[in-house]
Image (cartoon, rainbow, N blue to C red):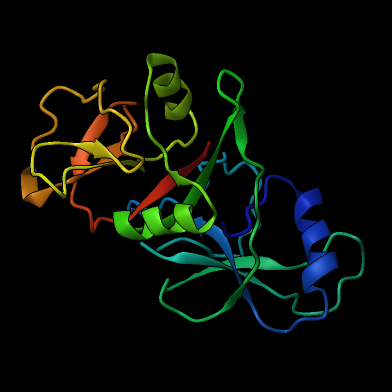
Length: 218
């Protein structure tokens, strides 16, 4: 996922190792997903350390954040780069960050939350390309474990695309447990793919919606 910063030490280390001397801005993982002017890290980490350029991000709604190079060479170890908001369709370079997978000791399965917002089919293909699969839920403990892996809504490996109303896992495991919230699945708007909601229950969504996802490695 795009680089996120939790403190000045991390930000200065990334700058000195990878960005020092570069004259162009680069993307970081802060954006406004709610279209309200409230900027957050895409990983849902708390935005406790910020380095906005003066006047930013006031008045910018629905944008994405750039890290700008210093206007002048830094005079100390505290680098003078700053952040600003631009349209998310703009073209800039970027730095990726990778977190290790989380291991569920009961089964030794590994799970990785990925924060690119893509459709269900693309998420399925992404997990399979890394020799895993979109996460599946097979017991109450796994449901509780997986629900804590990401703060935002994310894709699960369940769909009824083959037989409408008959949900199946991408792994062909038995679809024996249901953790749908009340009123779900409602099959609204041709919804045929499953997400884990922020309420930690399941919802059916249109497979073309854009969501983060979790891969599982058996």
